[in-house]
Image (cartoon, rainbow, N blue to C red; front, side, top):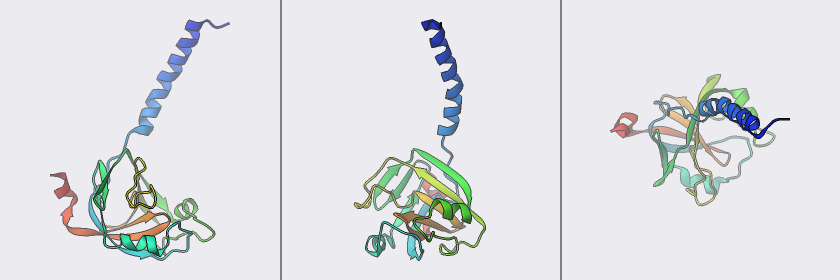
Length: 174
């Protein structure tokens, strides 16, 4: 039979073995340089997936700007501190499977993406009431479509945004 000290030693050893693994999974990646800066939402992308927002909720986002920094996401005057940043290369098949939203998932073609895969940036944060309609923050999931174009989503609605002139990643670092 194990004594209390032996059990404590076993727990301590197990914990010491797990802590380095937890630290590796919790450490945040830096914001990709290509994403840093200010972006203007220019249009709603027509997709076949199911969305929780309709045209009425999506339309007010047009013309608004998103600003990405290493530590925060800003939209409509609200700043949301980032807790973690995760990047990965995602294929169209993976994207459709993970974002199915019903019987007819959104496709890269519908999003205007002509590559076989793109860089996806997932920004983790606490829930925030930025839109007044949901705790979801528009722009916290980003597909880097091209050098000056991104695709962001909110409640299953996809938007295209272009880099806003005048504000660049370098000017935000000052």
